[in-house]
Length: 72
Image (cartoon, helix red, strand yellow):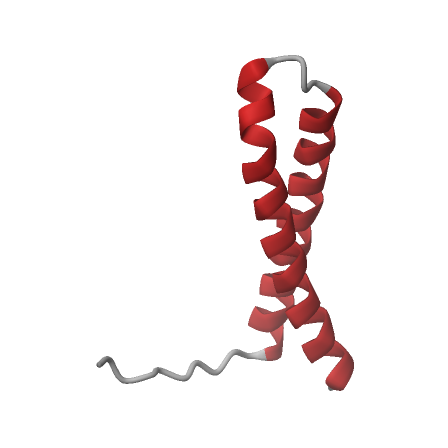
């Protein structure tokens, strides 16, 4: 079993990661809306659940960062 590693980030690094998480969420949201609007294209219909999963994960990550920023 691997040992767990703890990372410590500066406020500046944490802010940058939070901003990147926000960007990933926003981009995935736009892509999901694009896919949902074009379900008649078979390849996009297959891709839509993958994009939705990515958006959900990005939303969760963004929530973690926002919660941590609010607790400071």
